[in-house]
Amino acid sequence: MQDKNYLMIPGPTAVPPSVLEAISRPMFGHRTEEFAAMYKRIVEKLQMVFQTKNDIFVMTQTGTGGMETAIANAVSPGDKVLALVTGNFGERFAKLARIYGGEVDELSFAWGSPVNVKQVEEKLAANQYKVVLATQNETSTGVLNDIEGIGRLVAKTPALLLVDGVSGVGGIEIKVDEWQVDMLVTASQKAMMLPPGLAMVSVSKKAWEVIEKNTSPRFYFSLPAAKNKYDSWNTPYTPGVSLYVGLDVALDMMVKEGMDNVYARHKLLARATRAAARALGLKMLAEDDWASPVVTGIYSPEGIGADDIRKIAKKEFAVTFAGGQGILKGKAFRIAHMGFADKMDVIIAIAALEMALKKAGYPVELGTGMKAAQEVLLGGND
Ligand SMILES: Cc1ncc(COP(=O)(O)O)c(C=O)c1O
View (tube, protein in one colour):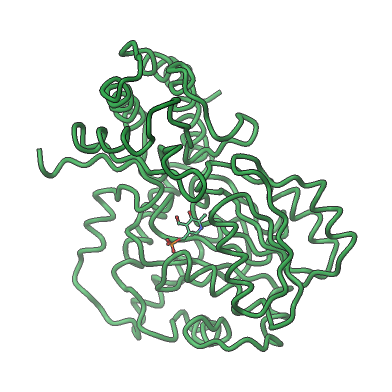
């Protein structure tokens, strides 16, 4: 059936019908009271999701644009930067800092492993950094990093902590104020349940002091320009108005469900997916202790290409899994369970995975993974 598409990738993710309806409403101008009231409402709800009193800018750009906004405003040429790298997106953050003239020290960890906080402590003790970069949820491997632990260390130094929360925020709890995150970046198309096109960036007082003195060239990504308009709940350039309308509605959905329930739902879906993969004899990229609640990375079985499994799942069952990135290309695939995802989405994903594995020549007793997932799902949220 042509229009069926079960999207199980870590962005863009499925968009709820109420959000689809919202983004298709008639257009209105952004230099209006209507827009200002909406922007204010959105920021208040985002502050609840980010757990912060900091300014939060909603910007019409993708997650990478949000990352560039953070870097362009926090890193001046010649600044010493510590980049904590656990995969593809950690590498991207480091690359951006280098492009803006940062002298980047990369502290890298094996793909599938998280940041070792002890090593961060050693690095911070031996060097004077201006900026530290971390990824909350490393989407390429399905690894959750300890932002609280990193934040505790960075807060003792003059350095700013910039966190890429593009695939985590909205699905994984983050406490910007308590964990002392100076800039948190997220984007619309993942756990926030919207189409691609918006980035959200929070900025602490400590960050503002740096931003004001920053010497990097900035125009579209300028936070002072955004702040100038933010004080009257507006944006310097034409915003993607429809996406803001959608964001307002998506945030209402989160508020209604309750953030604790949102986070518990994601954890449950991750546990069900992992139990299913394990029951099928598959190996996961991340250990349980640091497994992402929003995306599960799985190695393909010996002798079977990950992309062959994905192709069968897509062609025969209309289920899209994400491929491995970077060094994991062809060796691993990823199942996302983020945003507008629920129990039956996991069941569909696992059913398709079992059939795709069988068709690819892997010995599967059909139902083995499903049963494991169903048992976790019936067990509730513990
Ligand atoms: C952790 C992380 N950071 C950054 C990005 C880049 O976001 P975008 O593709 O919206 O530019 C992604 C996208 O997958 C991501 O998962």
